[in-house]
Length: 269
Image (cartoon, rainbow, N blue to C red; front, side, top):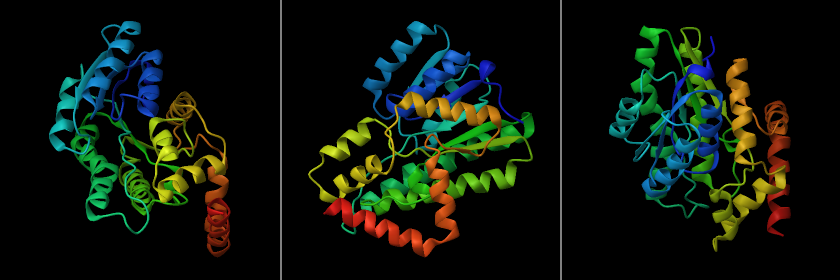
């Protein structure tokens, strides 16, 4: 079972810019109604106004913290009807090297993992009773491979992939479609901030991303996601080479780790 995008009621978190904004725009272009969520209320309002001009009557917004249960409830309440598609796209990239502190670890875990768990808790029971729905996790290639420079991002994105896999294994044959989006380098504010950071580990993190493959636009990523949803695929891989790397990692992890060490050394040098 796959969701019909042309008639869907969708929620997209982290939608004020970047990948989230692109996903929301592509869904609206297909005919969906979309509720936008983001922590940055000012920027979210600007984005929502721009999208509303092109798609009147099909855009709503609720500013807030995507990891908060109350905010998730407010997003669902703002929808014009039952939510068919939830895109858990909000994420944070904080904490670099072993110096990453407890607060940075806690923030990464709360937003990158528990925000998705809390959203699923609010959605899945109703989907099981009322004919199903689609849950999208925006993870990262870091969740399949690793993220040089940032242990917090690497570990929490691995956990996000693991939660999506669990959802699919538990509910995928009961009407709940699950899609896990795992892009590599994408030209977003997050990437730009990392490249300009004074923290050597943060710069390493972003340099590794842009050196490993092509840097895509948010629209490229949104198109890959919608294609995966329509085709009923679990993984949406905007960078196809990530699938090859993931297979090689599984086939010979020692060789893959050796290669990552050489890659890190070449970037540091």
